[in-house]
Amino acid sequence: MNAWRNNVKKRIEVTAAVLVRDGKVLGARRGEQMSLAGFWEFPGGKIEPGETPEQALHRELKEELLIDAQVGDHLVTTEHEYDFGIVVLASFLCRLQEGEPKLTEHAEIRWFAPEDLLSVEWAPADVEAVELVLARMQQP
Image (cartoon, rainbow, N blue to C red; front, side, top):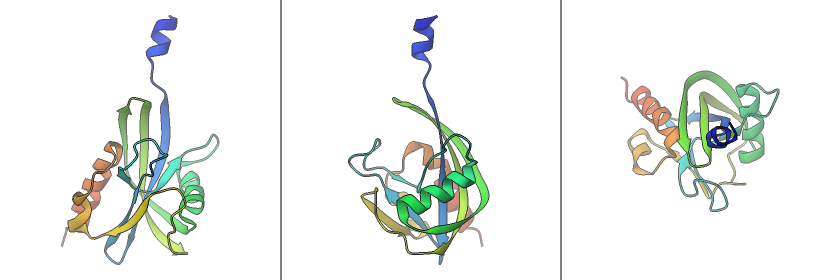
């Protein structure tokens, strides 16, 4: 039984903000000290015990980007298996309320026009959300 238990990967529940402003979407490139270094992602982070995904997202945006954002509709929840565990990522549409995003943990942040979203390498767990955002933004 112990051998089976050792093969079960840890589930890591995280949340992400799809921040849209003036027709552009905010992406963040993971820093060298982070797992998945160099990949782009929608900003967010781990859901702590007792938090809802929305509460976690609000907290993470304050900590990581020094902003306040209104967490809106749930966009998609995806799962992706990495070597370190299974990431369960809940992505939400968000609106910037206060502050301008600032670098604290990421190597770079950028506002992407829809046509530029696929010009960078996104973390695998974020890809489905990127595709959904792109489809929504390209609708007439």
